[in-house]
Amino acid sequence: MSDADPQDHKEKMQQRQAEQRAKVAELQDPDKGLVLVHTGPGKGKSSSAFGVVVRALGWKQRVGVVQFIKGKWKTGERLFFEQLDEVTWHTMGEGFTWDTQDRNRDIAAAEAAFGKAREMMASGDYDLVVMDEINIAIRYEYLKIEDVIAGLDARDKRTAVVLTGRDARPELCDYADLVTEMSEVKHPFKAGIKAQRGVDY
Amino acid sequence: MSDADPQDHKEKMQQRQAEQRAKVAELQDPDKGLVLVHTGPGKGKSSSAFGVVVRALGWKQRVGVVQFIKGKWKTGERLFFEQLDEVTWHTMGEGFTWDTQDRNRDIAAAEAAFGKAREMMASGDYDLVVMDEINIAIRYEYLKIEDVIAGLDARDKRTAVVLTGRDARPELCDYADLVTEMSEVKHPFKAGIKAQRGVDY
Image (cartoon, rainbow over all chains, first blue to last red; front, side):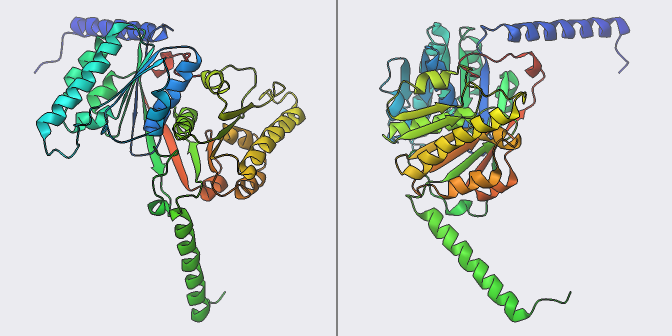
């Protein structure tokens, strides 16, 4: 292969620079809703999403949350937020198993939950939408990464979105405005600590 | 120096093992309030502490929060939690400047705020106490690390504590049951993003 034409190269670089400037300008728009990903093996991925929910509520914003976890599992965040009018809360149906005994049913449940989130994102009614543990549903291939990104892309541009769960797909991290990785600093006694009500769920 | 007596060494090892076992047993007690540190340069240190507050509230637990930040700064979390009866909220006095123009006044404000936290921790009235951004006050030497650890140690043993802020001191990490480090995965457009109401404060 021969080297590219220098004129071609220059045009390509100029185009890339223009795209980059447009992206920076877009991000500087204070009304743009950012896409945030919380991933990594450490604690705090979901809890920091719920902290962001609290901040939004403090500013009288409207929030939607879809939890991609087994529906029967009671969590403190669910007990707390479900009672608030400003929060639309949806936990994936009880049929969801994570144990792949009925993979088709799990896929249907995940798709229905994501449909709910997509609707909220597109509606323009929400300042913030949280998709908690969605990365797990993507990792298990219950949701297609292309569909998730298409849903994000079709959102009302003022709606901020937080997606949580370990092992976030690289395509999602590329799309996101900000990716935070939580890592657990090793502790010799870690293995001895059980999950506690309040702190862990 | 000569090598230690083998009998001495054996006794020392046995003692260390006994201490380790006692520590593991203590941590396995489901009623023990854990000490958690959220540190690192990434986002999510404070917001995940507030997510833990939400979880605790969902389980009808009582929570105290002391924010070691400039008092005038309005945050969504403060606006939200201050209105709840189950939360005792304290933000460091307005006199606090961070700009060290009046270092003695800043130290007095930090000590007063920590005194409030120490009182809540020792009282037995709280399931959870959050000291938000206290690591900054320690780093600036407004608070002595020995005093902070003494306060933690004198807490009611069922009270869980979360301490946030970058650059947590090693002594604090040693004392803590769990340390989570938040790191920002680099993003080319990061510099273009301004702090946003709801997401960032």
